[in-house]
Image (cartoon, rainbow, N blue to C red):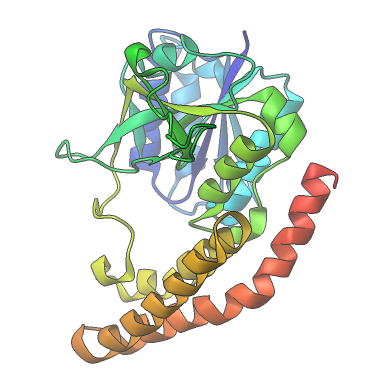
Length: 309
């Protein structure tokens, strides 16, 4: 079995180095690590060259790809998964540069691979051992009306409907059938769309309890514009609300779509009146809501192309 790891990075060379070292020190090794650098300006290229000059580790397996411009996380994973597929990977292990997998993380994923499975997701925790990036459990009813998310609980597996790109192992056959992530999401939501697409059009996905990874994101709280204090990052939440609204349009019910729109509209006015940078938060949320209407058509065209519909 050929496993290729894909890491997307942007201006976080310290975290990237720690991430790469943790991948190199796995109990079960990947055959290659593709690093997609979104045009970093912090000396990431020099750090990679220094790592590859060290002869004590298998750093020759690092395949560093420097992009001409910042493609965002979605564009980076589009490129990385495309390259891994071209390299003949049977399974593609993907993560952000602030993901630090434990030593047995990959081995525990690989131990549960099955060609009928679309992907497997690791258990993610933060720097203070708090839960993070929790996949959404698949609770759709079976023939008798009960959900069966616990069908493989005795194996330490839970049936899930989606996951984030923080240590997931993707089946090459699922990529061949379902295509690549939508690169135009830029950040946030591309992972949810892609993993739900894999489940819908290829096969089941599971959360692997014994595969563990530390996510060293600066803000460990669940993504929400209310939890963000950096005004520049607040502006980026327009992508978050746009992309997640499109995902609901694609994969959820009209009732959930309507309730989400109403809830976000109400939230926007609360943010405007009661929080620091309220105007920026308000505009970011409304920009996301309005852009979703037009962005949905673009995403549908992309999916039709990827799925060859």
